[in-house]
Image (tube, rainbow, N blue to C red):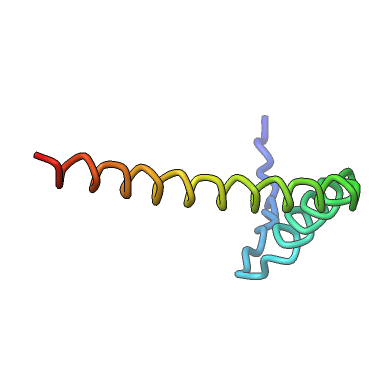
Length: 74
């Protein structure tokens, strides 16, 4: 009995630092999420955030003013 050994040529996968697949996947995901938003929703969100920031600022300034008046009486 003769044992025959075959040379097996192994395919080596070449790894590179090319991130095109990663960049393509991430940009496609981001664009698909952005496409779900309506321009009206974005505008409404910006307006509501602005109103919230202004109200928060005014309330903090008002409380600081009231606290100053209370503190100066003592």
